[in-house]
Image (cartoon, rainbow, N blue to C red; front, side, top):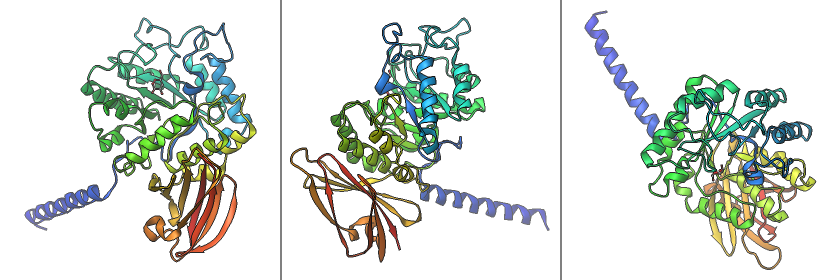
Length: 421
Ligand code: GLA
């Protein structure tokens, strides 16, 4: 074959390739960070909401942030069945560090509270079949005032990798400009990848950016495995409500970007603590499953009611959260004090959540048409319907023109799954 002919062939093949790539880029959702991690939303335990920054171990040794606390939680994650239903990451939040770096500039744990060091703790956690998460901050200091990673991104990434850390929550306090914030989050992402260790990367980039600038989620997903958008959760219905309202009001901007490798993070599950009624705990669990949220509990696994434990370990709810299609659910209507949410699942199934937002009176009936769901496809021509929460029960075979009626407690949720037939 003539050389010229071959070159012309190469050129047209190259042109075709460029065209295919352009079409694929336009058609495909945002590309995920290429570390192969968080193909489904990460699950685990994170100390912050329940244990905050308690650093005085002489005052209350069972509550302070120490290696003992994490070893106890690791033991319970195994013995109480948490690991076996998917809660895998045991995550340290702020306040684990010593007030200054060591002579080589490396972060170091507080020597009194973590006398064995983080590498030893990671070994312990790994020996239990779990993974260890740690916390650091993109700015000059963490939110609680411990050393920040600014100027040390490479070194900190290497330190975490050398300790055997599996997840980094990277906070955004004390960063002087939006440019430094963005650059810091990106640099840490590259630095983690460069270590060669698989480290899930949790960001708060859009939360800190949003105050001044609209986040670019396509870009954020290229650097982070999950990201916080909204204020810190606390142990109260008001807080869970605020997260849900923020999410539904902003769903146009945040829902489509979520998928395998990158997730919106509405913050920790506070189920099993003090502030939520039983129905509100059901709402948090159901809606975190609908939102394809990371399931990071912040509670005391040493003291948790059997009801809260069963809710957090409900395999059908977890299966919705972990669905392999990886599409985040969204609110489809809000009327007469009820919210109706749907989440497309693999195999043409749908998860449906009906939230009763009324805070007065008793249980209320909500009636809706199945033709309304999945743009008319969820139950077309027919489907089986399973109620998952508050209790498991079979709602039988339905068809496209069926209406369903459910009774929902104030601030509670009924969670259903439809499977098309
Ligand atoms: C910020 C984060 C919280 C927690 C604290 C720790 O407020 O959003 O999740 O990590 O810092 O100081």
